[in-house]
Amino acid sequence: MCFHDESWPVRDEACLACGTFCLAYPDECLSELPTLFERWTEQLTDQIWSVREDAAVALGDAVAAYGPSMLDKVLPVLRKSLPAARDQLPMTRAEYKRLHNDVGAHTGNQVYSCGSLAPKLKKGPAPGAGRIGCMSCFVDRPKAPWEATDGCIYLLRELCVRFANRDESDREDVVMGDAVLLPLMTELADVCRLSHYPQSDDLRTTLWRQLPPIAEALGKRRTKSLYLDLFIDSLAKNLDDQYSCASQLSIHAAGQCSEEIADLIGVGIFRGRLEATGQGEVAFDRLMEDRRREKNMTAMSGGKFAGREMFHSPFGPPMASQLI
Image 1 (cartoon, rainbow, N blue to C red):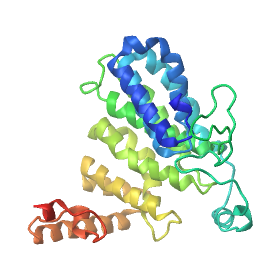
Image 2 (image 1 turned 90 degrees about the vertical axis):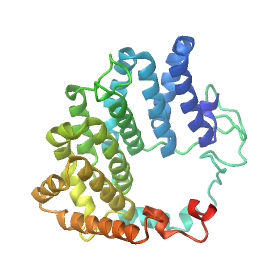
Image 3 (image 1 turned 180 degrees about the vertical axis):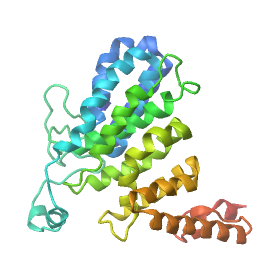
Image 4 (image 1 turned 180 degrees about the horizontal axis):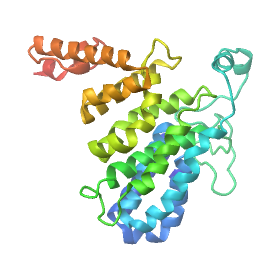
């Protein structure tokens, strides 16, 4: 029932809880597995990013619980949904901004409930397995194609982190080898290059945030030889805010991604790959200089503050050092 609740935090926790149950009690959950798999794959394309992410975590738990048979079900879903952003309707940034700022377009519209994308004050039971909850509504904001691709990025992260390395896999009989993974990562790199819709920036932000743990799981050798070149041109373009029309969120995510992958494979090697694209190396140098300056400030303070804690907001909770 909670999978169809109007409140997205309820759907979010339902995904995680059922995945945990399957991991802890695989035999007892086996009879409900077809229904659970259908629900998890539905939530993988949810309108809320955290629901998509936790659906991916739950599917990873299911693969860990049931092994190759479950992986054989997950991979077709991944291959089908990963290119979905190609079907996103074209829209320019100017049109998107104009739509957001159009008073007429936002006047007299349906009011939505807190923690829900279902309409407020509209009661009525949904037929079949529709949304349930405090309002029992059956109207919902349509899902967007790019959100399905976004959910697949989280699913790829789960499969890589948990099953890409044979020595550290959650199961000895499940390994994401390059023969399976490389075509998926190639498709991901291609679909994330698309920019005919404004939410493409959000999709790339998700990619840059999830690529470092994927690279860490694949290891230095596989990342350098097979996977880095798939993404380096898009990363270099997104990294340089002087020539990019990208949002500050995606630029920051690209910078963090660059730093973490450079730490993995070596700063000199990573900068060389950037330089080969003809862009991004100046922005990367600027980024690394900022990081060195931050470390120097931390050292000068005697290690009392580190990272974001140096720039403590008076409106935030007290830092640990202030509680002693």
